[in-house]
Length: 388
Image (cartoon, rainbow, N blue to C red; front, top):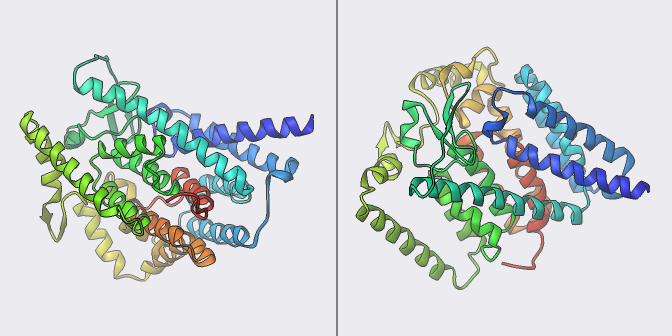
């Protein structure tokens, strides 16, 4: 009876962990309510309960222990530099203390479950999104707001309602606040599955990412596929096929009269402005001034919690993280997402770490569940040599 109860607890834990995975990307259903706080509390309680009552689910290896110590130290540093992060980081500790020490076969099972149900979830959302754009179906939306986000809620997906986000109207974001948030869920999961496009669930995620028109997503997709499969003798054939497919798709959209959409989503965002690509608009001009003053001050090493980054709009990226946690924080976080490379000396894990660090350079959300959980689970999968 005890084993059955513990097994049930494990499945409940995995279910709520998956919900937390989704919630980390800010879906519309957690806006302006406490549902995410409830899920966090449940995951924390289940995590500790499993550790105490179901020790046969867990294993303590030197590599896992060292990773958790670095994770714990990184969280302590974040809490020291930003005291208001303490409640959410306690949840991360409770979550990871069980996830990190799960046995390898259970971790692989959790990764498979997450990949399957996330791809089904996104596939359904993408189907309704495309059907709506093609006017095959009509859905009466509701209007919703959350902090700086204003959206029309079509239930299976949302579209921006703010005039400031009109350029992202045709960028698929599913039910999440931004296209970039969806990218932060898809790319780590694809990489955790070793970019295995023979897996139909990975195929769905790959196609969905193309509809986000995320420059960071496109770059990491290309680099990830190329570097993971660099030893495959057919890689150039596949890359050429992919390039021809993209060119053909662009030409078809042009012929169908969507040239204005392509200009907004692609060409205009590839132009250089003020020494950077226009699509790489992670901070505002006002924040740039604050950052320039910060990086030349003594606070650059440990961050400045007196600077309220929320007043500068929807900023993100490495500059925001530097202001919040300093150069020391960036170094510690980089070590956290590199430690498995040094421990295993595994090429695939090295590439995985590089891709995640590139994403974090753009968004700097190292403790989002969708990223951290995929790193913990994906490392175990990438050690296997069963497929390429």
